[in-house]
Structures are given as C-alpha cells and as structure tokens.
Length: 403
Image 1: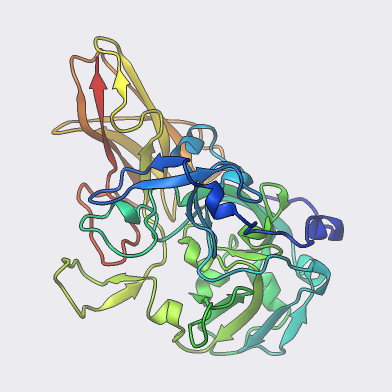
Image 2: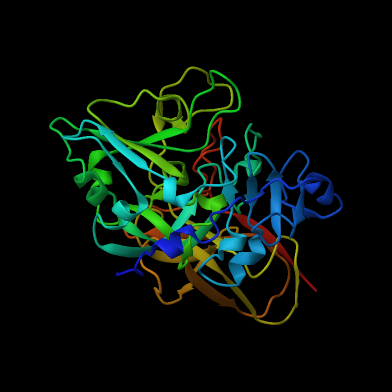
C-alpha cells in the first residue's frame, strides 16, 4: 500500500549526536532481572527502562547493542512499538549519522555506478509500506538443549512493524543491472571491532531482490528509522530472517557469482541434513526464509489458573515466509484447533489466536501451540538441533497449575 511521503525534514529529525552507551549504564542495570527460563544454566538477565531510545528491555549486551523484547510486550498489540523492538548489532554502530551527507553507493555488475543521496533514493520509485516481522536467526537460541554458543536469546528477538520506503529494484534501476547478475549484496556503516575481522556484509539472490515487497526503507511505524534500527536506511526482506535486513545501508553491490563474504559463506548457516551434537564437518546451507511459529502470550510457564473453571488461552502466530493457515493447541496425546483473529496486517505479520478449554480438572502439562502456513509447513514437535541454535521453530511448551 502507499506510504507517507518522505520529506527531508522527516529524514533529518533526530539525526544529531545520539549517545547509546551513556556512562554508568551497565551499572544502572544491576538489580533489575528477568528470568528467561533458559535450560541448564544462568537464565537471569537485567532489564532497564534507561537504555537510550528504549522502554524496558532485556539487556543482553550494551556495546554493540543487543536488547531483547520482553514477551509481555506481545500481549499488547500486533505491532511492536519502536521503543520495545529488539536490537541486534554484530559490530559497534555509529552513534550519529548526518542525513544530509549520507550516500548509498550502487555498483558492481551495473551499467553505471552511482552514489545516491537520501532525496535521490526517495525519488527512485513509488513509496510503499508493508507490515512484516523482523526476527533474529538466533531467536530462542538460549532454549537449545544441549546449549549452544552465541547470544542467549529467549523468544523476544523478534518484532512486527510497518516499514516504509521504496522498492529495492527501483533503486537498482538507477544504476541499471548488467547481464549475468546473480545476487545483490549490502553493507552498512557498522565496522568490526578488531583489525582483520570480517565486515557485516549480506547478499540475497537477484530474484528475491526484484520482489515487489523488498524495500530500501526509511520508515518504521510511521516514524523515521530510530538510530538503533538503522537510520537513515535499511533493507527489508519480508519473510526472511533479519540477518539480511542490513542497517545503516551504505553500499549496494550487484554480483555475477556466488558470495564468498564471511557472513554468507561461513556464518548464518545450518546443517544441510539433521545432525547431532557429536557430528563434525557436515555440509551447510545458508539460512534464508523463516518457518512458521506460534506462542502462548496470555500465560507464562508455571502460572496458576482456576481449577473447575473454563480457561481461555491467547497468543500470536505467524506463517514465516507466507501467510498463516491455522494454529492448534497441543498437549500430551491431544490437540484442538484454535480460532484465528482477523488478518489485519497481511501475510508477513503477527496474527492473534485464541482457544477456550472446558472447566479444568487438574494441571495442564506441557501444552503448546503449533502453527501451519499456507504452503503446508508445520512446527515440529521435536527440536531440530544445530550448533548455532538458528531458525528455531519447535513447539514451545508450558505447564499451568490448576488450583
């Protein structure tokens, strides 16, 4: 659908120096803890309302910022507010960007390399908006058993927002795509901490880059992108994991072969076939599209519910890279269909579900919700373990105590 018209005033709003690691911030987090329920190890994480530009978040790391959305936020609405949206940076980010001086270089296998201002990006094509889930590939990693290395996320490394910008293909048209093009690669303004470390660079196949809904976006929930979320521009690839949604976009490069950069060829990959923790040196494939997932948000694990009374459960679900088809409540040897709420925001967004159980005779042990999308992909009952904890979509289960 059509988006709001980009204005220079909107772009430069708040583009002055923004402090993201205020002195004493780490010390201010002590004593405010949330239990993520991680297995076999420490699961307490600090929360704070003091992180610049954010409400209360679970703090995984201060620099480069890694902030997790508390699951309680997902009870409040299908659109995740900007100030409660998770944050993930691989490398330290600039704390200020001057919009008037920013340029995006478009080169590689193009007819004519160009360097585009924000105004030129905005004029490249129709302004469009799409609601889509942005989910870290490692969302839920901290729940893996056996445990794996990496950021120990609960399930809050995701959010759903309205993104506004122009189509990537219209920006590419400013340079013209040359014959033999296979992929489009992106880099941002974040830089490695140490010499020799790989820059965070990602690429997508050309056919994905040319989709109607893949954007160069400047807007997030009808506001300019916050600096923590990639001001002034970021890539949006609906249905794909957020590793491809490069922030603070500065370079677009068209490739004619495979991408041998570290974060495509070596990292953000999963086993090509099922593996065990003992397996070594197995072939891998890159993470791309998201699978379906569903969550109970009305009740936390271990919550006490009324015995002898009906119980209504509610939550959110999504189809991954296509629309959600159904959600079922599952227990130990039983299942029942849930009622889906209206499709308010399109195929890439969160959707509500609910189900009412008859009066409870006792505890509800190991219940969960299972999502299925319109392409037939279904959440599995057992975890497909991998050594990086990527692309988790096992049914998430809780136990409720009836009293």
